[in-house]
Amino acid sequence: MSKSPTNREAISHSYAPIPATTIGPLRVVWGSRTYVMAVANLTPDSFSGDGLMAPSDSASDFLDRVEQLARDAVRDGADLLDLGAESTRPGHTEISAADEIARLAPAIERLRRVLPTLALSADTQKVEVAAAALDAGAHMLNDIWGTRVGDEMLQLAAQRGVLARCRRRGAGHRGPRAGCAEHRDRDLRRRASPRHRGAPEGER
Image (cartoon, rainbow, N blue to C red; front, side):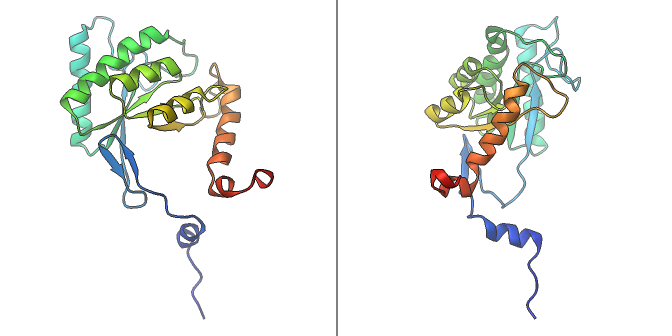
């Protein structure tokens, strides 16, 4: 009598192998091991209370603190570092793209210089900020609102040849694009599925 496959074995036979993904200096071989993404909150008002920006900071002090966090993350085994310069806590107030870029771009430039083997992700919902982050040296985009209507974030990622991670906020987070984000998340998952990619239009 043949042995029934485990759930993991059944799943592995249901999908074609995922090709390795390159994120800047990092090559991700899916299924080979767990990859660790650390987080740097470049804000004074982080929901988790670990924001790296203080009102009395000089630019140099702020960047020194960002660098130290990144070095600690690498020491502790991080493969990627996700940098966000705008709080997304419940009830947050959006900051301007210019203010967000002023926090994010110098931090990315510093880390590209001092830790060239660390993959860097830019966490933002604004396409103009994402473009500036890529110009500064980010390797990946992370849009927690699931992209804006029109898929500008995905279009930017495609134009620049970088990976984009797009997901919606969890239940209870009613941000400026929460309504469309939930729709976008479902739609992007559907379009990204192997069945959808390989099926004729009428069967999707």
